[in-house]
Image (cartoon, rainbow, N blue to C red; front, side, top):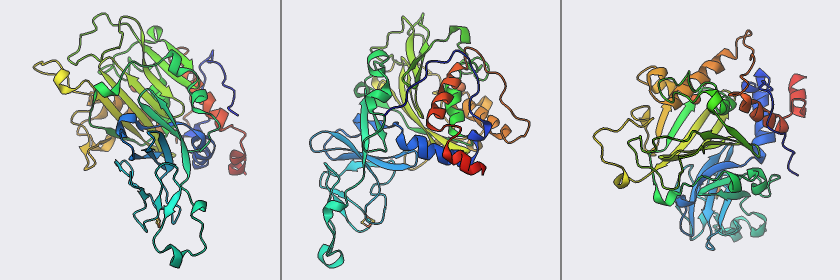
Length: 402
Ligand code: FES
Ligand SMILES: [Fe+2]
């Protein structure tokens, strides 16, 4: 049964104890009690257009692959072979397995449509008594919103996808269609910080005019509007007086004449940026109590549709970090050739401030003070949901305290 959701909070207040941002026992509880039941953005439908197309993704601690069946249905399986557990497909890789899902180690082979074990080498000699039907791949659940595919590590999730969405599909849907856009180079930002610090930073409207005075420059809190949808947070952009005041092509369908939803934070750790000129989807992957990474994919209008201007503003990530053979750009504070606050990349500014906050957590003097009534209320909203899944008086906390 899904848990009841408390209403949008009246007051901004820090609910989580500071230990929850660095304590390994708390981090373990989050994996067991929250991420094992959570929906997370995995990939997009355009990644797997044909029957047999798959994409392997890391969903928090779970290696999973998403695959399109012969019947066109999208399914997800845990990417761990039932023989000795090996990952069948490499993380991040796409391909086609129309003729069967074959483990590279000893060639156990599974059926595409239901994950059942079809066969294995030397069956009669090596496993004479084994019943193939006892060893199917573990299933995960799939939900599709727009072009985005979300997965849940449970085969039959306690929170079904529509219940988890909380009506988002009907009330706050973005108009962006990825079929008409082209994907930019994906970026991974490596943070030396707890994953919740990043989520809270993303929902904190109070810092926009100050930390980002060189990049985002606002808006101020009195001009911000956010909606609570299910457990998710959606913030609106202002109506734009001059919709074509940028050097990039506008994406059809985005009505900028009135306030429009521009950032979505899906509880617990996925998000969407739906700007008039780009669309991004991301996850923030918790690696260790004080380490996480932001995996960000972005789409824009294709190059041939972009206006021809002499010099475009540099895109936010240009030049920073390094490009790996997988084609992804990797950025962390220690790879920068300038100070983070000179990077002109608001994500890097956020990464830097999250790390600064993380480092201070270890000082005995550090305690969170009052939160701002407007811009920081979403933090209270987010923390309440964490506590719904990982209650302060939960069994593991008691165990850790004993
Ligand atoms: S581990 Fe997959 S076939 Fe042996
Ligand atoms: Fe920020």
